Image (cartoon, rainbow, N blue to C red; front, side, top):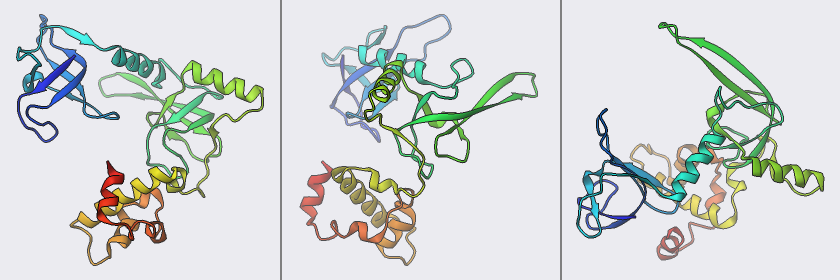
Length: 246
């Protein structure tokens, strides 16, 4: 299903066509909170109110609930991978790190759980809930489980088979000596460095530091960026830099 945007917003362009992956527009006795999920690009989905959209033929959006197969599969996978008290984690399970905020952990890489602990909480109203924390191989600290997703059964089976046949498993161990910027391939690394440099150049809080100094201290500090990482970029022409960002 495709829709046309009827007005300009911060993210949307009037007259542009967007692919729909989820639509909730079925009126119920409990009310009608309608929304649409569209694909902004290959990596970003956006959930919005339906008032800014119409069908390609100009008609209003139908009063139905509809989901693409892609969305259904992603939601099923999300439910299976989300760690909770009803879908707990245990020692020996494999998890994927989904954030980029812990030193020694690499986004989207797989780690093996080495320890699990849980805490029971109770609110003033008497409601109780369980909070889980996990430790992965190579780490000395526990992490909140919302920073991870359980690997699917298929991924777990592949890791087991690769282990059995002494092949590369892709499972990582926490190593704080590894710079995050060095975990990217050359193309992705260069693109990331350009974005960090541009962000630093436009930052109004830069004080009296040079752009590269600010990029290392603030904009790119979570990637452990150093000044000499930019050596191959600052000699490029503006046109070549823009081409790499496309």
